[in-house]
Structures are given as C-alpha cells and as structure tokens.
Amino acid sequence: MRADMDVSKLPNHHPLGWDIEFEPTTLPEMFAATTAERLSAPLLHFMGRTYSYSQLYTEATAFAAGLRERGIKRGDRVGLFLPNVPIYVAAYYGAMMAGAVVVNFSPLYSVDELSQQVADSGTRVLVTVDVPELYGTAEKVLKASQLETLVVGELASMLPTAKRIGMKLFARSKIASVRYGEAIWRWDDVMVEAGWGWWLDSELPDYQPLAPTDLALLQYTGGTTGTPKGAMLTHANLTVNAQQVAAINPFDNPENEVFMGALPMFHVFANTALLNHAVASGGAIAVVPRFEVKQVLETIEKYGCTGFPGVPTMFQALLDHPDIAKTDLSSLKVCISGGAPLPAPLREQWEERTGVRMVEGYGLTESSGVVSVNPYAGIRQPGTIGQVVAQTEVLLLDKEDPAAIAPDGEPGELALHGPQMMSGYWNRPEAAKDVFVEHHGKQWLRTGDVAVVDDEGFLQIVDRIKDMIAVGGFKVFPSQVEDVLLENDAVKEALVIGVPDDYKGEAPRAYITLRDGADASGEELAKWLNSRVGKHERVDAIVIREELPKTMIGKLDRKALRAEVL
Image 1 (cartoon, rainbow, N blue to C red):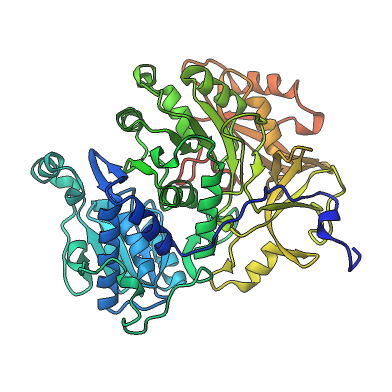
Image 2 (cartoon, helix red, strand yellow):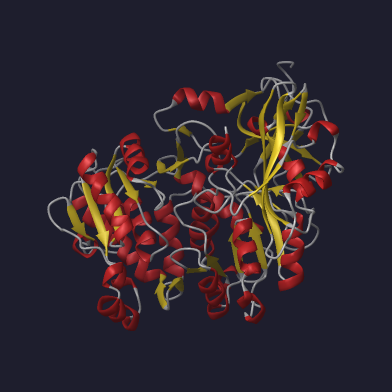
C-alpha cells in the first residue's frame, strides 16, 4: 500500500456511517441530563412497580456517596452479580458516580467462574441480591478470594407492597439467610443521602472530574476460545453507542418508547440497547428478572412495549407458547434480533403470526454492543446484519493475512473502526495487539467474522474464521449448511461442527433439535440435506438431540458443543 494512499480508496473499504455528530460524555452526566428533563417519568417497570428517573437517580447518588464514605476510590472496581432488578440501575450509575469502574458478572456463573473474574478484574465490592443461588455463590467467593465486601439487596423490598408481603410470608425459601456484618453490607445501609450533583462536588476528598475517555466498564467476553477477557469500555464508548442506537429510531417521540427488558442487563447487548439507550433517549424499560415466556407476554401487553431487543431463541420460545395467540402485541413497532444469526424461517413465522417487523442486528462486546442493524422501517435486506450505525467504518481483510485487504467484492474478515470500539483488554496488552490491525493510520478491530457487503452497504456474515471446517482442502462455512437445514420444516435448531476424518481431515456433522410433533430420523434428514448442498458440504451424520447447548443469553453455543463432542 502506498504511503500516500487515502484509506477511503482501499478495496473493500466501506465508510457506511452517515454524517451525524455525537457528543461523548460520561454515563453519570448522561443520566443526570435526562433525569433533569424527565424527573417523574418512568425509567423502570418491575413486577408491577414503577420507578421514576428521579427515584433511581437519587438512589444512584446515595449509593455513590455510601461507596465513597466506605473507602471506594476512583478507579476501584465494583462488580454487579445481579439479575434484572431495580438496584442494577442504581448500582451501575452510582458506582460510576463514585469514580469506580463497573464489572458485569453473569448471575449464572459458578463459584469458580466468578472467582476467576473477580481475581482478574481486582473487584473490591460485589453487589448481589438475597436470592439463595446468587447470595450463596457470592458468599463462597467472598470467603475464597480477594473480594473484600458484599452488598446485598433485598428482593422483597423492590416489589409492590402486596408482592413484598406475600414473598416474606409465603416464599421464605426464595430468600437467602444473609449474615450481615463487617464484610457483608445491606444495600439500604450503604445509602448516604446526597445532593443532586453531589458527585460533581470539587470539595470531595480526592475529587477528580470524570472524563469521557475514562474507563467505565469491564465487560468480559464470552470468548470463542480460551479464558474470557475483560473488554475495557470507556464512558465515551458507551455513551456514543447509546446515541448511535437512539439515532436509528424512525418513530415518534422517543420519550414514549417502552422497551421490553427480557435480555439480561449484565450482557453488553442489553447494557447498550436497553439501559443506556433508554437513558439516552428518555424512554422506559419494562424488565423481567429472567426470561420466562408467560411473564414476557404479560409484560408486553401490560406496559404497551414498543421495542423488543432479543435473541432468536427467545422469539422462538414465544412462538412456541400457546398464550401468544391471545396476547395483544399491537403496541410493538419492531423486534431487534441479535446475539446469533436469525434463521429466515423464524423471522417469517414471527412476522406472519404477530404482524410485528423483525430486523437483525450485530455487535460485539468489544464494540460496546451495537455495530449494525437493518432499518426499523423502509427497505431492509433479510439475511444480512443491516447497515452500520453512524460514524462507523467497515474494512474487509484478507482471510489468511489481516495485514492485507481482501480483493474488492470478495468475502473478507470484517474489521471495524468507530467511536464505540474498546480501548483494549484488561491486563492483556498482547491480546489487544492480536485483535487490532492498522491500515493507513487507523486502528481496526478484527471481528473474526467473514463478511460480504453489497452496494447499498448491507453486510452479510458468511461465518466465523475459527468455525470454518477444512474438508479436503475446501473451506466449509457451518452457517451455510445450517441455513439449508433450517429450511426443513422438521428442524427447529441446528449446529454444524467439524469432526476428525481420516481421509478428508475434517467432515461436517450436524446436531439438531426437532419441532414439536415432527417425525424424522437423522438418516432421512442427512439424505435430504446432502442432496441440497455442495459435495464438500455434505454431512457425515445428523444427530438428533432433545436440546443443544446455549450461552447465558440463549444463543446456540458451538464452542460448548465442539468441546463436548471432541
């Protein structure tokens, strides 16, 4: 490449982001600005109780003041080991008001998994709730790690009065027996009354104003291989990505939006598409503690949800439930599917049954959550991940050599440049070097996904580089074989992996689940599939299972299946 070459002249370079300006700020400042305009407006609906912007902002400032009073300093890590509950919002923004860095932990983690990430991040304080499974795990980690303190919220106190009393009287088994003491604090006891802009008070000890470039969040990657890494996301990364997502909305006043909060907020998709998006635009979120089909349908109807970000398995589960036929979904304007490829039959069935448009989007932990999405209204391209959000650029790299650019018009490894890309991996500078590549003065984030792009800027993911199967010198993309399999009415879910083969090196093998009432054998389905794919793509077998492994947010987990089989 010539030293004077403009990056925009590179083959397979696509500056798809439209001309729009966003203001990088800090998450507490974004929360304060919206709260000042939306004081009594709802931010959160939870189990029949509504929390206003001012309520949760006040609780966040009180939590921040309590952390500072108890010795939490700027840059200390505060972990959240929480389901979707109101104190997640107060703890998230409050920890940042105190100058701390938030670390999100999945409530599904085992003691070992949580201990490893607590140690890696250097988390000092961990916030959880008095649900036996969560508190029990957190207490064991407290005893066996460098973690200093637990802060425990009482779930009953977050519920409406009738449910709170009922839980205390009749659901004692759902409440952990918490041993409060020097290292275990009650959430309410941490609170210290503070003024509106307390966290901006220059008279505070060791006060330093937060900057947009400061680290805000450590978000651990699910990772396709190896130990999860903590992606370092700054306040600018997260506030700009929230604004990028808000700018996509073509509908009326965004303050009228009510998002269905079925995605877990500890996950980067929900952190941006739900929490920070709502706060950036002044909307509300109707949350459920965990994904339960009947409760989700009731919540959509009760609160008139207008938008629903989710993963494909969520939408499939809703379609499979008999209550969907009698649920009023007329308030929904759009459903956004992410986290995993959206099967065409699922999208078609969803839209036919519900009348609600479903669009596919794409993002990574390392990109703060959202990179691209199909338009919510107007022209879209099913089967693609849409067009990139504003101020985002795309470059397709050579699949074998990331230092080179893919020939124009050919598939390549998707690389991204934009204000939402992480600053690196926590304590892993070498890993960051592997994931970033420089081309003509710009740093590009390598995604590991192989993509193509059309003339209108719609991106299509062909597959992941690490998932490609080498069959006698040919490359087989599992997702392409899976797409064909899903065209069969008997097939509900499908994963294809490579298994050792003495002659070809590897052979594709499919693992599937069947739709309710379907009667088909693996042999019949393999014969059907192999007549519809290329010779090198033919599977050696189709294995029918009751279920396939899934990640914590319900995404089919190829890594887990591969580890189990091989």
